Length: 310
Image (cartoon, rainbow, N blue to C red):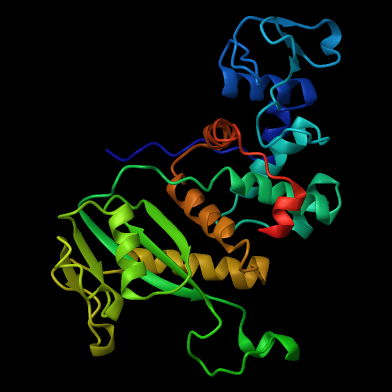
């Protein structure tokens, strides 16, 4: 029996569900606290609701501080209405490749600078991977991300041929259930790739890779290593292949070239995590996805200075 199709919201249905700021606030509170407000300063549940919600909706009886659903989250100190925060999350997750900050600014009625900062703060909440190790048969592969050389300004061209010099390395693993975990690495040497495999893959699992030399010692490290020789025209060997992770690289690069046009090296990790997070939650309904994003917003505040510096 096939899985039911996830519930999706059209833009019209989104505004019917969240018609005003009060509806957006209540949704945030339910997703973050269920039915019991929790102090964002000390974690106490002994709180009182303030009259007219001024200066903030709630006051903690233990630490005596006022707080709201924004306190202690990535929304802290933000002046944007919660309805726009919800709409930004909806926009970022409604397409597989994402949306550029210029288009988001038009949709939200804000400046491009505000939209860019908003999008990066939301992506910041998606960075943490699960702690458990993946098992079964997994595809591991690497790719390199950068602008097309002929499209760069003259001052940005490295003129190093068609190799990987100057490009950003991204390594990923896909398990037999389709889950992706991808990270940006400083290089693709054997020690670096082996560290990535040990961090995300359970010892004894089957690892399928191409013939890249960085994976040569995986058998000695306790993994069942299968190599696929693409140079010899081999793409599948006894149902073992790397097609799954390579299709994810295709999605990532389509987003890079067609949507964003450029991802800086300092912030590439957020974009990569955004693509993998959307991929892993593609079976979620729209409301469930937004709720999951809200759950991950605790203690994730990103300042503008932090965004610019790293």
